Length: 410
Image (cartoon, rainbow, N blue to C red; front, top):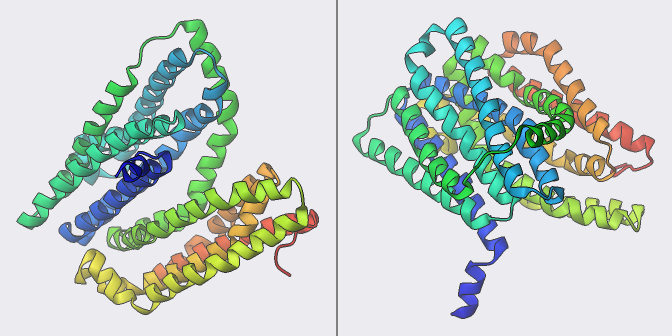
């Protein structure tokens, strides 16, 4: 019993549990929302979430990622934590004001949902900030608590709506915002932010600005590289197509977690081997990729074969005609997995400028092709565009790895 108790309190177990709660509740909330909302309303909801991910990328680049690097070396940790919290609020208020102005000017239908959208967006971004701060501080139990509060609240509210069989877009946004803000309130209580002097804040701000400039540019380009065709699909093909696309993306989000876990484990191992033997690091990346391909390829094959049943299970029979999107995404994710060793090799060799330039080239390719592909082939064109972008990205990385005489596949 004592061994079981110590296992449950183990740091690694807590991290895995927290990720399972965070990811699992997000997936379940997405599927419940897709089933309850009309396809048009879910498309608008999906578009809103897509914008939030861009805002979180910007926020992370300016606030969270510099914090993750700087926290351990700064002596005045309490004052630094307070600065980071207030800096996050300033960044948040700025982006929220920009989004409100853009929404009011570009999409009149969104005006009626702005209060709920702002509430949901503020809660979503602050929740993401707080959980990552606690994880960076190795306070996993606190991140777990705020994630558990948020997950329970959101699933309970959506569960009641599922039982009643009724949910509107405004309610979906309100329930999301309320759930996240409950977790945020607990997180702020744990953090207990104070005040910092102007001089201290200036020092901390300059540090974040120095680190965040390139991180900000990378975050924006990387988001557009991955989401250009999805945004364009919503603009050119309408919210129903966008909703179907985002529903399928949420399904494949489980595989994203697996890919991230795979990279988090394999990359540090590869770096350690690379420091002693370049040849051994190549073999390590090749071997672990071949082993992972059996599992990953098997999952993708099942999704490809049972695409209609999977999408109906996730969103209901109203999405049955979009089952081909799952097949296209299965092919895309197979290419992504094949290219992951090249991605890890670029990071392992600290070719950060090549990593960034790859996404710039991929984004540029998308800009040149998205109009033709969407006009001629609609959602199939969007999938083809994502595949082309990924092939360009991988080919660019492979080209520079070859120049460094680090070819993984011949």
